Length: 150
Image (cartoon, rainbow, N blue to C red; front, side):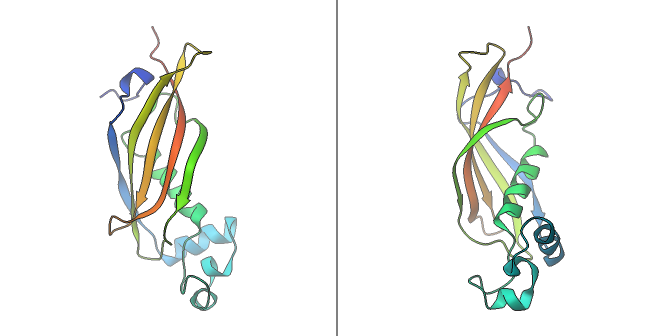
């Protein structure tokens, strides 16, 4: 496949998989301290008596790691990932220190833009999985993808 992918390079059913990343407590606390400063993400003692029963990553941390893993994958859309919206965004289970995450994503639709001849939309069904292949996050992303220049 080409280094950069254009709309014409996508077909329904294409599947991709990212590399993996393992989280530790320091990473969880660093992200939370900056973006989601809640006790279940920052303090083991407070987290132990929380709904989660222990330290967990912010769901937004999981979402940020999801996009990072996609960007670093073989997907490589020409011009970068440009989103036009997310659908069916859902968290399934908490991510804890020591969990290893990997993203699987599949093309579920490719559509030429009616109003812009130089681009289209690729819909991806995305699942972020833990080390047990259990989903921790799923969503559908609508990406603006340029057509190959003539």
